[in-house]
Amino acid sequence: MVSMIKDSLSIPDQNRKTGIQVPRCTSADELGELWENSRFTDCCLVVSGQEFQAHKAILAARSQVFRAMFQNDMEESRKNHTEIPDLEPQVFKAMMNFIYTGTEPDLDSMADALLAAADKYGLEHLKVMCEDALCRDLSVENAAHTLFLADLHSSGQLKTQALCFITAHASEVSETSGWKAMVGSHPHLMAEAYHSLASAHLPFLEPPFKRLKQLGPGQL
Image 1: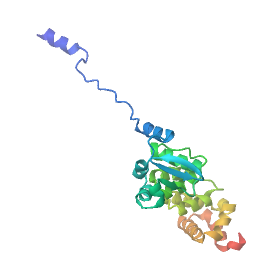
Image 2: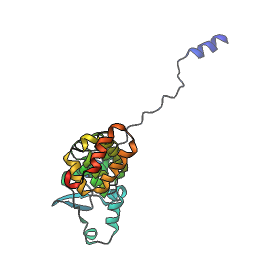
Image 3: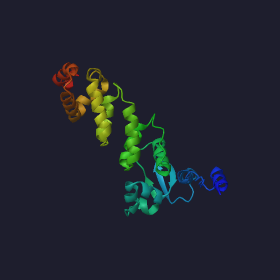
Image 4: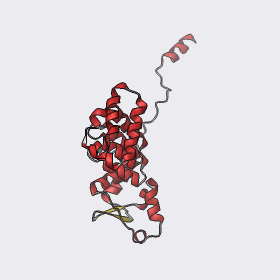
């Protein structure tokens, strides 16, 4: 009896469940193929004169803006022919690829344009991706423009980061052409930057803060 028990204990884990390897979900790839190959499309989107075939159901599921466009009794909706203004074809294609596959586009060269597109069409996930890319690219030269973009497209996280960056590099940012251009055109952003500087209570920021406050739009 003892021998039998010992033998049973020494047997490898024959009864252990090894499980089954579940393959990767390919839904994104399959939907991307529908977009790439224009299969079973039911609407036409026109961008700068170029026509793109797409699927109403997919666009409506991903974007409330597209959903509203297709629900409204407009001539474009009845003809399944919709003009997409204010977007370059390259930016539109990157946005559509995200809509179909959910994959992050190449944001190195078009994060600002895609931010505008994501904001316009209610693509919050893509919008945050663009905010993150612009935040990681913050520099003295582009800080003022990034602040402007964040304010224009209601990008709260990016705006906070841009203000923090400007606060930390006030002297350098105040000398850039982007900052000087913003002085006259967007005074409310200047006021927010001043408030951020004042709230920081950092001694080394005091001189640039005073200089910026004293200089008017015509002096910068």
